[in-house]
Image (cartoon, rainbow, N blue to C red; front, side, top):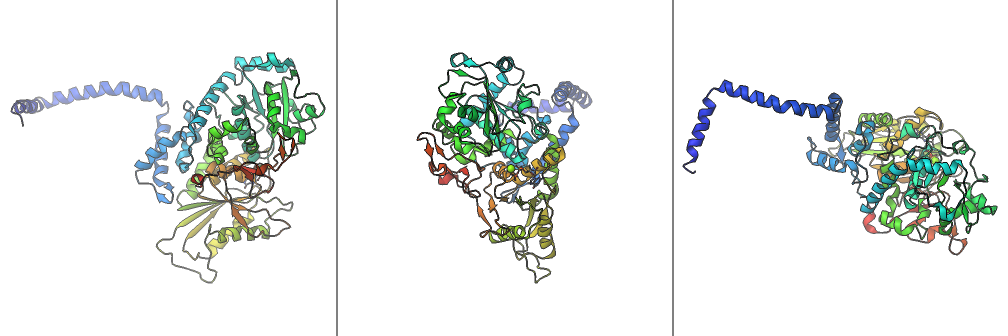
Length: 564
Ligand SMILES: Nc1nc2c(ncn2[C@@H]2O[C@H](COP(=O)(O)OP(=O)(O)O)[C@@H](O)[C@H]2O)c(=O)[nH]1
Ligand SMILES: [Mg+2]
């Protein structure tokens, strides 16, 4: 201790003793002066403080309860809450600059999902940011949009040299089931990125009700007064405006000197050989300057883009892990609106959150007769028991004392019918499991049949796909795009229930998917270079045939480090 410190301390002491009431008053005034501007700033930043505080409280509660990799998060959530806040933008995938309250799911999804082990590449992130810039510049009602629209309204045919519009578009036409819609929007978006086009989405009856706007500064929805909109429903395989039919009828040849202002691309499951030339580089080049491409598809056509020599290098830079295309694009594009987010979070908190393990079972039956079918129920049991997704029950005993290590498993079943769920739930209620595990079985809805035009039906379908994607282990049905969406968003390689033939349970009942990627159900089998038929599932190691559909194509990773 230095001698000159002592007087200072004693004088401080004297000051404390001196007029303590006066000091308190000064402190109070100082605090008051500091607090007023602070309160004003808070008030301006969060106009509704009660909702903000409540949101923070809810998030904290979720953090404290959620389990990651089977272990409960620390009571105060400190380690994982920093992890979570770091991942709020999904490793840079999501842009800053959105209004959070208008789309709670965008930044709250990280509270319900495990952090993805698959990181988006920095190249993908930079491409998304530059796409957002392009969309801002060219989106609906911008000057560029209005100018490009004029060409369409005048029905102009333009010379290739004068084409070069500043903004070019791919218009996605609403078509098919919700699962297909989600997969095809992602495909069209990737195509837009690869070709420097702007994606505009036909809102149909439900898009705006189900999904938040994905891009920060301008809408992705095609304006209602778009001149060709009334034709969308009429577009089909035989449409004379389609690229395939124009080629076939020699109205448009690849060496054509002039370009139409728009082309209809028919890429639906019933498309013909001329339509499939879309996937050939020389044809891509021929319509690269057409300002408006109108696309109708029910197919996840991404795997075939990887077979194009002009797209492939860019695709591999964007997705070094090839099987993560839908995983990243899906998480970037599809954020449930607040209404659907309510369906998801209430259900999750009520039935799934507290379990040690969450198991999703998605049952989609492509039979004409209404279910439930015995061969399907047998298949569900054979698959889940043989693959140890669920424990066996002991039908002889009425009670087995649970061992110390027993866990609770929440099974989320989704299906149009009630019967499969009712059956499984009854089995685990009436009998104890041999492991002592306690199994809860839950099904959010049973809508009986597809009701594409009904708002509440579509909301439930989207909520259920999303809920399935929040599970730890997933069982899906072959051929189902509903299941593909769940596996892709969740980053899960599901057990696939193989498609039953002749009302018979398949043997084996299911198999593990090689990839979390969706399957392209109707790919072309054509070698564009040699102009001859080819098995496109056998050309490169990362484009293979799907497990659930032998002629389909899917992306797989070939490196062992991606085998997560
Ligand atoms: N809520 C709900 N709807 C379903 C379910 N399965 C099928 N649907 C409805 O039927 C439609 C089927 O089309 P899609 O999503 O393309 O799935 P896919 O037919 O299995 O490929 C869904 O979009 C829903 O409208 C289900 O498990 N739950
Ligand atoms: Mg479908």
